[in-house]
Image (cartoon, rainbow, N blue to C red; front, side):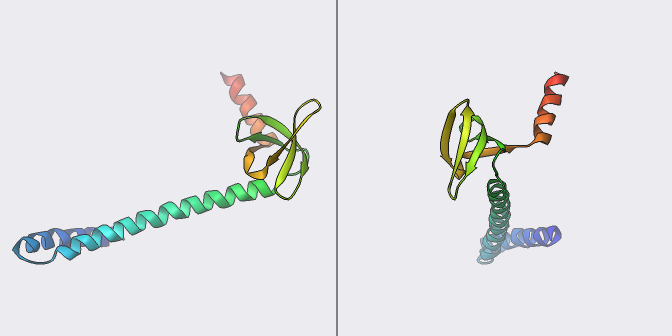
Length: 121
């Protein structure tokens, strides 16, 4: 694929010389359009994967999980509803947030990983 792009680029350079003589400038424009198309395609593909992973993480939240809200508050899930989650942020302090407000789900593995990093410092 890269070889094809290089061949097209060389053809475009030759086309640029021909353009000075009166034609062939469409080849260069075609190369730019193809490269731009590939960039857009791969950027959208990556964003779609990230969105799917985030949605999967939010859908997997259950009672008792520890989460970090998008505001940075560490909390424990008390109740999961359709669009909302009730969380405990302190003793006898319960807050209702939207599921979109969940920044990250803290698992036992990631908590242990953070503890070992702190101990190494």
